[in-house]
Structures are given as C-alpha cells and as structure tokens.
Length: 146
Length: 129
Image 1 (cartoon, rainbow over the protein chains, first blue to last red):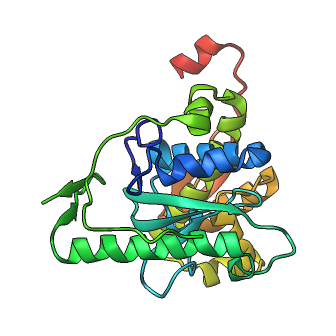
Image 2: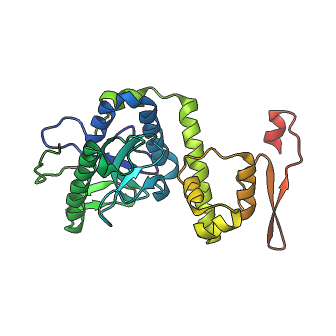
Image 3: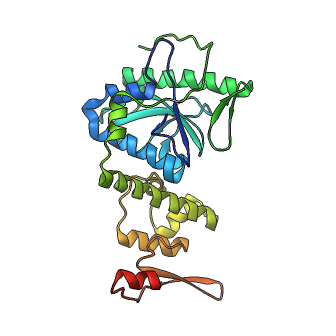
C-alpha cells in the first residue's frame, strides 16, 4: 500500500475477489465512528514503515492458531486491526473492528470474530504459497511472485 | 458474515489508498503523529538496548523494580514515559535516552552517566561545539 509502506517496512493488504478496495481500506471506511483510533492506526503503521520497522512488541500475538502469524496491532484504542506478521520488514493487514471494553476476547464479539477468522484463512493461503515457493519475501520486505 | 472466497488467483500489485484511509494519509496532524512516533521510537531504543546488553525482559523488570507486564507495556510503544523513568532506564541499560541532559562517559570499561554541564547560549554555540 503506497502511503503506508516506507524505508523500514513494506505494508500490504488484500483485495478479495469482486472487491475494489483492500481489506484495510474497508476497515477505515467501516470505523469512522472511531476516528481518533483510526488516526492512531495510521500513525503507528507509518512509524513502523518509516522509522522503527515492524517490532513484534508492537503487535498482540495469539489472535490466530499457533504459529500462523496472525496478530493484532497494539496501541489502537478500542479498534482491533488484524494482520499477518512475517518479519520486521513486512506486514500484511486485513480488517478488524471495534472491540467493546466489556468484551474480554474477540471470540465473544461475532463481527470481530468473523474478521479474525478471515485473517486466519488468508494467512493459511499465503503461508501455503510461500511454502510452495509461489511467493517469496525479499530482504527489504517486498513480496514477489515466483 | 465471511464470504467464501476463491483463493485460486493471488497477484501482488501496488495500490494507492482510497476512501477514508486515503483522506487520512493526505491530512496528517504533524504534532499528533510526532507524539505517537516518539513513543514508538523510544520503545524501539529500549528494546535494542536490551538486546545489546543481552538482557531479557524478566531481568530488566527485576532491575527496574517493575512487573514483567509493565515492561511489556513499555515496549509496545504506547507509553508516555516520565523523565525520571527514562533516566532510570538509561542507567540500568547503559544507554543514553536523554542525550540533551546526560553525557555517557566510559571510565576503565565502566559506563557512567554524568549530567550535562554546558549551558548553550545560542544556536551557533551548539553547532561549533
């Protein structure tokens, strides 16, 4: 995604078949009731891309099955943005949503659970393609098709 | 509801952001973004210093007299540190998180932090120093 990627990390998202916008664009469109949190999301992503790289400490792990790499971005108020963490130079963001303060786990909130589940399915497909050498992650974070 | 998707094709392309994200990328409050950026850069510097010192979070928590969950929160880039905490971290990790206030001095292999004494009268003095 241009405008989000930078020198220290490349930021990707996914456009599902039949859609024109990526999942992260849809996430922003769907959560305008939480503009302050959306601004935090934008600022944290741009800081990682341009200054710090994607540090694992900036993400909450355990949002997917063990070792599938599905994470949630930290420091974004009541919004949850799910993604796949590859390494410090590349991250792929999907969608997410609002997590009410009284909800302890995303499984308790159906819409959020659906977004997390979607991210797990996408992670599974991408990891399969990497293992099958159809996709490769370069040292600078670029994802290339083989 | 998650639609079932056909994952047969997968292409990698570049894209300019549109919609709300596009608007937010074109309208950035510099101060607000700088605040977020500073917190994250400080957290990254602490993490790097831990790695340089080969210190894990548990040991760092012990030396700082804090809980491990608090240390984890420090490294998440959300924390607005006080000067006191940054001073303490600088000393424990032997890294200078406050270069405008402290000078790092090495004496017989031991790292010390001394308060910076020089008073800058003008910006020209700063450049010539």
